[in-house]
Image (cartoon, rainbow, N blue to C red; front, side, top):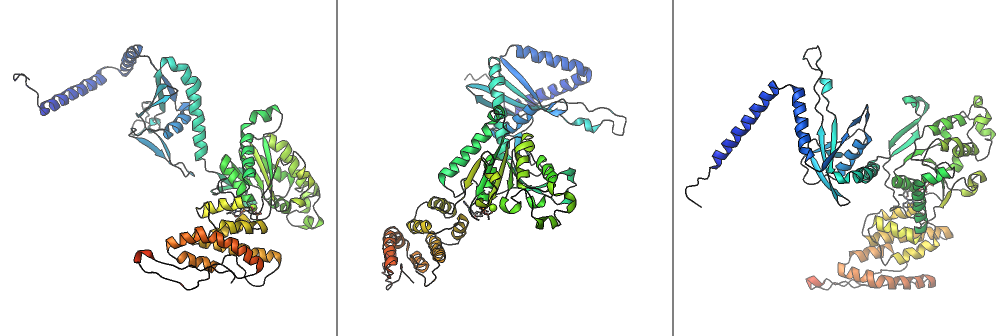
Length: 536
Ligand SMILES: Nc1ncnc2c1ncn2[C@@H]1O[C@H](COP(=O)(O)OP(=O)(O)OP(=O)(O)O)[C@@H](O)[C@H]1O
Ligand SMILES: [Mg+2]
């Protein structure tokens, strides 16, 4: 480098930059004072136009408000962009709307986000419109209520992609935002409030957040039946046009029947969680007259599930209520017999007016006794799908074991399987057993004991405990060192199970002895003839 060229020092560069900035600010403030605002706006717009004339970029502006109402596209963009903010985004906006649980994240003013869509690039920029406060003759001078700044998004892309952005990209944003909103939706469980509380805008329904953990993944039921229900629900929500074309109201009825504790209510919750539909739990004994019932049903919302639990107990299944009911205070004389809620009255209304004044309605009736139901309910076309919730099967047990114990296989499953074939046990009972504390071996052993007890009670016999695999034995097994235990579980248990079955048949005591050794300490510990399997 020639020695006569002098490199300016960092200090000199900083001081030069500072003086340029100060001069620029001075010019700007002088220009602001001298040049009228309208002229400045005119200058800015024209200079901007001059620059944009040389670029191929176009800008689509999406305002926050469309007249007085909110612009749906702005809302959709806000939701969508909140889900794809890139790590380079420096400022976010976070809000937690009232009654919601999830925090909303969105883009902050002056932030930018670039995205690729179908091979072309799109840039989003969030900006605020500057609105001058209105001058009013009051202390302070300016009306602060005018200071709110409407926001808008700028969508910047190459002009050759204009049609694609409008025809493909924006519909995609709308669709995605809908899905995201649905995902975030807090489900509600509505119940009829009592009369005194009906004042709230005349709506008889009161709601609480529905936070039921049941999903199709946690529900123990026959795999084919579960798949059928899921497919049916998906078909239903997808077929709006078909229903319209066929002249049918867009509703679907499910009748869930089975013994208590087999998962009927859990299935309703799983359906609601799957579709993100609110639940209206209609307790028919709370409804006095048909006109009340109509009023209540009409005030339910679309995309909801109307549930009537234990339909055989909550309503008279015949046209007329028995004399006993007419004297009950719930049905005073002034209502007249024709006004009482009857099953056919309910069905007629559900089939008729109510379902045609709403969309995407699901109606679920549950019962423990399908045989007691009025034929009117079972008539084809009334309840579209009948689902039998049965006692626990091996498939159901495996799902529960996987959910509760985190295991998908175990030698003790064999014993459970054998007992499930000959015992009527509900998934609720199995779940209760699996909730017990302890190693899987112990929990499964408890379950086996429970099933054996149940089987014996069903058979009517009660003499002596003849456990296939004793709880005590399994506990001892778990206490042994890990290597020994694994060996016992993998090798001896299947063998012992087979043997114990034969032994039970012969009513012969079977014993298996395990000698324990602790290799690491080099000491051999021998337990004298420890009873592991057999009758006790
Ligand atoms: N099929 C199942 N899968 C998983 N868990 C179940 C199942 N059935 C019952 N349970 C468990 O048992 C509890 C009670 O079940 P649920 O209330 O759904 O039974 P139900 O059939 O509606 O009974 P009821 O006829 O008495 O109303 C649930 O909270 C759940 O934990
Ligand atoms: Mg129930």
